[in-house]
Image (tube, each protein chain N blue to C red):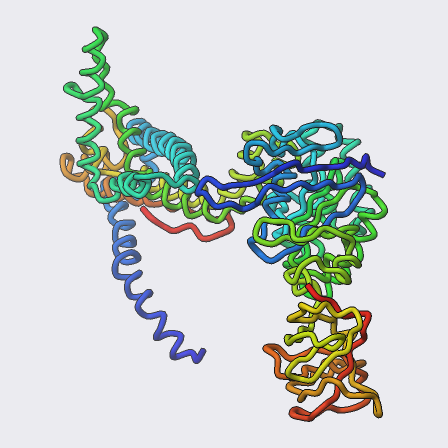
Length: 270
Length: 345
């Protein structure tokens, strides 16, 4: 390809990337160092106990969300791909519906389910039990995250399950493999690239999710909430910028690790 | 040598849940150590028959599958100890060649030393020792199929079931592997069931061939029997090339648009006579030319010419003739038919 044409075709991507990512990111990076503590602001995320705890909480919630989402989506995705039954299309559509919900709405739904007036509580009191309220705990947050992570994951896994060669499973069975051994030796290895890429996106999304955290995280500190508080309440713009940059770096790292582990392309999302 | 087991199907039919009848009730006995080829076009029920034997499908009520004296009808494939070889190879992509071959041994909880020894034997048997540590995606199609064979045989199965194992390979490789599989099956003396739609493959490999048509067995027999004495027009046309003349009998002479064919045993009711290309030849000079036609195509094949002669029938007659003489499109030729090759079906 002639050099001129090459540069010309690269231009849209380069322009877009610079305008919406590179320039704001660079600005953010320098703002992060503009506070009283200067570049040390970037270290605060590990030196300041509160920030550090928020970082760990964020990563833990994201990790648990990823594991649960992959487990649920794998079972449901492979099942839905392999069985045809009346209402299947409607069920798939319903399961992918949360894609259209804003995070705040998802958070609100968790409150409806596990909050003070929640359905779970009603059921428990009906049988004379204690009213469990976990909407505002880590469990509630994870539940919300899992709920909005499932749609993307399940679609990726269904697409991968469709490509699994049924002969591979038959071959394994011919050697006497039990259903669990078939899952371990054939299905999971076959789904591996999809699990890695869907898992990475799920993790990165959970790290950066704000809407759901905003509704639910009244007692727990996750990084997006800390950034919001620093920015709006404390007007500590430099600290907010430094934390934002670090949050972006963590999400990016998760995707990069997944990309090198799977050897294939993992869509970048955040 | 492996323990060879006779296999029989008794009254095995297969109807799928959507109501499609894939197989009409079939009885079939396969001798211990025999290579039986299931032959037919797609949708004839040959793969369904193989899957019933494998235990991947259950026959409709009333059908029985027997391995030796044991009724295995209710046993799924996991419990039948059969070796499967697929058209798509079905090798585990997450395992190396050696790990693939060892897979069945591993599931049987054999010791590492036993596994290693058996894998070594199998690699040597298939002459793929140098591929042991390769990953599957580094192998060619022919190599993959050798690994698949080694993997299936490693566990000393009671029977080897092959589902179109050569179909995905190119013509030359198919020839080589067909020869290798033939020697392997003979050497091991294992009961083998081989599914193919390729009649040349069926003739080369089968001790007996089962020709199938729309879920029914059209004919069972040795390759020679099936070729020389086809039981029906379907079998005759499916195996090899068949020439056909239509007309009517006049005493010992069959009259057709292109002329006549003399045949002392001609049935009086014959409306159609059949014969193979190798029983058809260009009439010698001075010989009474009973059939005449025009050349509609002549394919030069090096040592011979494949000639298509239009004698006023629906399809031209096919014959092979020495390549010494050149034939032109539209040229008139006189043909003779060997009497011993004539048949009516």
